[in-house]
Length: 461
Image (cartoon, rainbow, N blue to C red; front, side):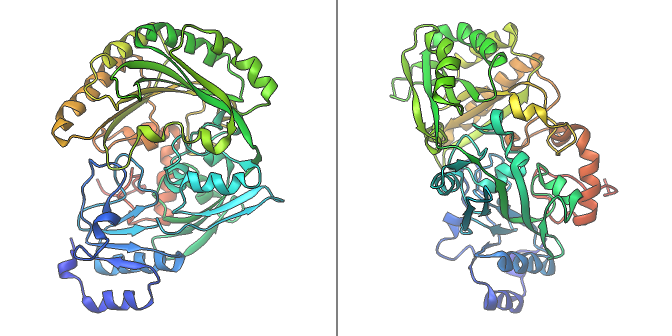
């Protein structure tokens, strides 16, 4: 493997002569900040960081890596828990400073570059009273979330982010710049709608927008000793939920530092105020909450509800799976496991897939998870490096205790870096083979493999 110590300085000087961004080596100021990603558990040292300012920078960086033998990792928002955006002795193509956004209110579209976060995206769209499905944490980058499918607060009414994707500007392994749409490159466009970073470096995205200024959102929390009843109630309201209502149910600790365990609903209703009042009436009337703060708010605000739970540089270890159903055995296993969590920052969340998400065919995009049902996500978060072993062990144990209720399907963007070999196939199900064939067309040498990798069909091994 090539390292910077062995690089041809003439080639590096030639790259620097036209590069409009910054080229950072380990000894340069700003290198440590640039190599860090959201998950503080990831500590990798790339040979070179190419902080790109435009598509030409990306194309030149790919060419440089191929000429010198450096592996390529790609960073958008740097939020992915597995930390594949950065690797030891590789070239990191850093898109974080590519922040251009253009809204076309007449066409109801938005084009945004790959360094944009959902907070930035939502702010510009909201200026025109518009929105589309983004993530549930506003500091997440649009690129990684979209390429992995893109579940969010508007999934019930508008589907996944990929269901509203109209075009992608992509730099391929050969350095070709493609404007990829359903008409120009139908197979590649299909693959980009959930196939991850396997097919090139996506430098910008165009999405469909929808009129939306306000939602009814917020949090209703209950004491932990009510957790079993709350989860059973959640099972019922989720099954009856209209498209406009998305409810995430989570086991967490009180944010006041008391250490008290809670169970809570995080709510977003994207319908009219009158419909929201009707649909939320049973939720408001249920049980004896210790906190109930739900009301009208701008859509970008609901996208920040989970931000404080995932501070930058905290240590993260996640596990997730889709469920057969939210049965009583799973509820018991979840509550029992959470009772012994070693970190007050750790969350177990249940996401409900329903509505518009389920009206897209299993093979219409690479994302096959189109059945109504639930995904469970354990996000273990802590700050003391000395507590890593304990938190990882607890997460694995909790996940195993819940496993009898799992199905063999996984959400791509929740995969960690210690998953079984079949995890990527479980994320794509019947779509994996087609993705592998398209990978062979656009990246036959598997240049883009520092990701949740899809090997090109016919690859050795």
